[in-house]
Amino acid sequence: MPEIFLFILFALLTIAAGEFQNLALLHGNPFFFLGALVVYSIVAIVFYFIGKVLDKITGRRADIFGYFIAGLIGLVIIEWILLKNHPGSGKGALQAGMFAWWAALYMVPRIFTKEEGKVARKRVAIALIAYSVISLAVTIATFNGAFTGLLLALGFIIINFQFLPYFERDGKRRWLRIFMWLLIIGFIVNVAMW
Image (cartoon, rainbow, N blue to C red; front, side, top):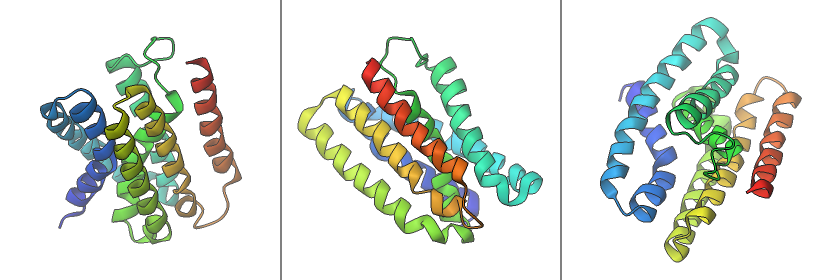
């Protein structure tokens, strides 16, 4: 199967549980979920080509640059500008979790479609499956959108931590570990301000 199709498949698997909970279960419209899959496929194609360009320009640093670019594109352009989930919008949006969500949409497919991704695949798969099972069970049991949002944000921040072995395959990146912990602090601050 061509790499781009695998990239799209892994991107859709990354977001499937979260969007199914939000759109099909909490909002009661499975057609919104199907529409979201189409939109995420388009975003995944854009992220795939961003990764290819970064591979040519930056070499081994492509994944780190792509991680931040995807996270910022998702957070600023999609969440803040298009969806109006910006700070101060009153929607209770968890900014650190949204960054982690969009960064994962880029990184999970990269990890599963690149040879060097072997170092993190098992960790990422376990974290993604654990998040999916736990959050779907909680959503079905409670149908509480706020709690589901908290689980999504925290779950994707934890999934982002699983990227570290991949990022550090050629040496420690202390600053990146600090950034990951800043996501946790940002999550805590967001929750405290809710």
